[in-house]
Length: 144
Image (cartoon, rainbow, N blue to C red; front, side, top):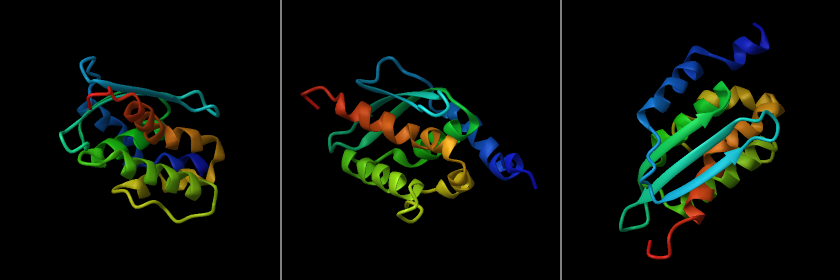
């Protein structure tokens, strides 16, 4: 099996289609962007929070490779109801895991991109949604 076949599985490619469930919405109050330095993939994320400070709405605009798109879909599928602290914790766990110093993070569906860990050039794309979310959450208006 070639490295491309191990990396671009039917499951991973199917995830890229799920991004259509999270259309970009200019009305979302918090916005953040992330860019992978290794491959140039980008992700813009818009968020809103509920009264308890938990993510309740999301819009995405991806100009990313299949790994970045799949990572964004995995993130989006489980981000609702999460707090900024929870997002930051998983961001840090992802960075540790990709560096080889931690276990696979506890996030639903993350195993679909696990094979990409063996490709350091894809690590930046895998981190896109967590970095865009942290950027969006840090842009929260003072009244939120």
